[in-house]
Length: 51
Image (cartoon, rainbow, N blue to C red; front, side, top):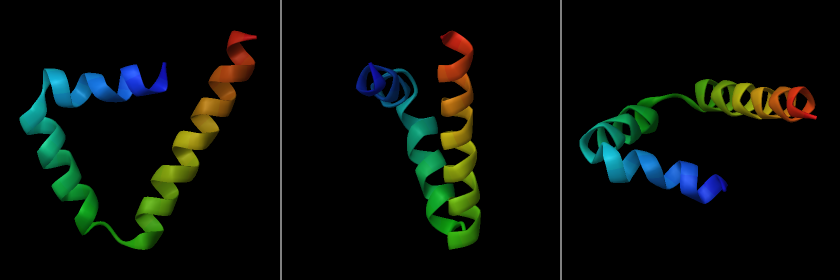
């Protein structure tokens, strides 16, 4: 399911997807870590909420 969701962005909006990755490359390690921990916490909260 995760691959289906992740594949939607490059399929539907390839230019936006490409530009987003260009911006991500420019971020510092700390900023990327913050985005990562935020995404993980959101996923955990969603899992508990769905159960």
